[in-house]
Image (cartoon, rainbow, N blue to C red; front, side):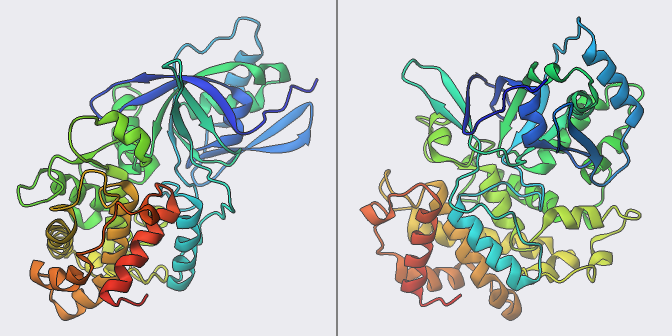
Length: 425
């Protein structure tokens, strides 16, 4: 028996749950939809074309428990099956590189940069914005929008529970709703933190194994074993608490989209998403943080410097990462942001797009273009970056041409600054 096909964009009501780490959104989603759009580092479901067995499950990297899937499948076939606990998802996470999905314009530019750097090319997104979003409806309710059937939801917890549906013989069970707790734009180290917190409290699950599933061992790792995105999270946290940092108190774990970010932080001054800062820093040292994280754990746990020759990557501060110059990396980012504060943020009106997600992303793009020369010459002072950025000080980012919160707005802002400072990419 064929069950009705899911059509996209898929829309459903969602409940906002305020929590200390980040707001999450609870929604009921049918199992067949989740099999299409979800993945984990261990499991993935793919269509077979067979109406009697629509999906087949395979492992991506590590061995999975086939017997457990079969057992869950048999339970799903029962007429009293129920799953009252939630599946935890990190939406907008690309499986190819572990980064959060950007708007189409930015993704196209990152693909070109990745090609030039010899890194892995991201998933082409065409003209469609694939990002999961939350809309506030006129009735005051929230709506979850899933634009496409692309796999952009990483399963933080509940993978066997979900993929057990692919083993069920009763195809109608694919219509069963599953409770989902959804985080938008959650950096991967925080996904690992949630997974480990949940599973390390269960006696039969070893805490180190729960972290290794994500390529992290947060409690025990020395800095020399940190993956690029773990280092980026560490430096982002410092920027959020350092008295010298212009971003102190401004970095929040929230969606990258400005509408949702503004709704979460109304009345508290301008804020920036953790994901924006983490990815801005990570792109200085890697074009594919997921591959680097895997390399650090395969076939055995090794330090950063030991993966230096695993693949080509022209990220500007990659050498600094390998030799453990984390202080240099942090100092460069901090001094650059102080220069941005003096040149752009200090005197900008409240409605300036230089405060928006696209504006902050554009400024990190500029740093990425400046970083290699600064590192080579060992000149990373505030004065150095201030001098470079000063010619762009007069730009008014409230002008209509900048008022675009999509990826094209980021490109427009970046190019306007580049023209003023005579920067060629």
